[in-house]
Image (tube, rainbow, N blue to C red; front, side, top):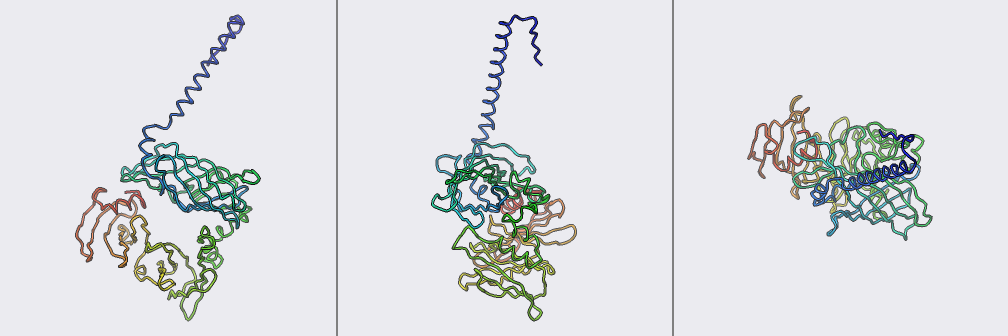
Length: 427
């Protein structure tokens, strides 16, 4: 601590000393600021900028709000890296507030990287920070622009950047956090507008959930009704809400809205399917069961969403693939024998988890092609620590052509390596 003795120094000397001290402190502050301006490490920036982060940024499981908590829908149609400037990522997408749908274009500008906590020696984790601006079409009603700061966590595996979902499922998990404002072109008024994956930044007066995002009761009327009702998966109201949450709203007039209604007929449980509120077909699920949930995703990687139904009393799902030729959903019996399938999008594979015993879990990987689903490899692992006990590889005829006991990570096939990294991380 500096102590000044004003009783000893003459006034002029004291003034000169004070000026010198202030100049020294000013230089110190400037040097610190300039030092921070160089952070993070330029070498790290240079190394990481060579990767393409389009798929890291291109996440559409977004939750958002605007103003006082009104629900904000955001969807990215395309994101691509600039051919000249590695910091720039060009964006096209849609936004929606209430029933007002707008198109936007813009850019995400990456400006810094930093290492993140390492949880596995086989991949490295990082954090990136960026600025963004998305300009809505000025010709559309109620349009404006979004601008703010962005934070994302990613991993580098085999020289490729992937979205980091390592902590997905943990309380408070979040990623791809957009925090900023929306400003009206017409009125110039600005409102807080935040969105992200898992959680929404700066949403303490909206989000009261512990394990997951959960809207405060006095805010649920601000466009969050279907989101909250969808938690009631076993009720008709919950199923109706889930259909609303599954909507491809960003397609506007081209959207195909799939909804459903359950019924029991002659001892069989059935679902009437509607396309844009017009009857399409009835799915016969065979068994009586009033508790179920629906999953609309692409199970055969053909670009169309399919229709999967989980019956809780059977703990299995029936999958109906969309047939463009027939104009309806067609039952795919392959999935009837699976216990807990995971859609491995990155490899166009389905991985089914099967309990062999209390101490052994089997992972079966099936590759999808125009000829159907073919078993290509299996893993046996311990259920609690994910230790790999055995790997088998199969040829087109279903014959085992390779078997490895207690394989190391490097002995796994490239597909298993990627699956381990992207889906359970605890090898």
